[in-house]
Length: 97
Image 1 (cartoon, rainbow, N blue to C red):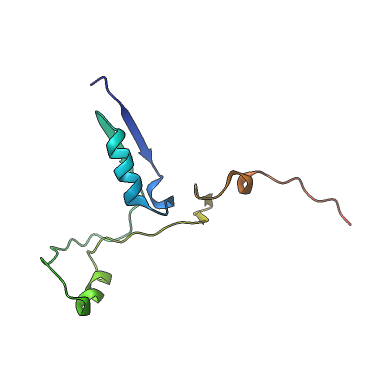
Image 2 (image 1 turned 90 degrees about the horizontal axis):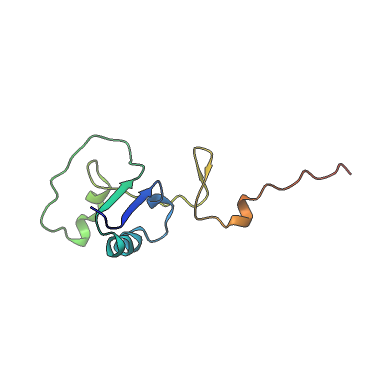
């Protein structure tokens, strides 16, 4: 190895444009990309058809189709990376009036 390694851990579901981020990361990695992300529950595996019509798009909601969600604020009590650093700063308690 000896090239560039990238750890992309727990970031994907916080991004507004995850596929763009993967394209950018893929351009920069040389030897090793370690990607870890949260997955949706379910064990179903689907062999997708070669094509769907627009009228058949409701099939995309069925079991086995990949699903992605953007976590803008919090998940399981952890703040999203999408929030500004100012939102993460602990505010001092207000004095009682």
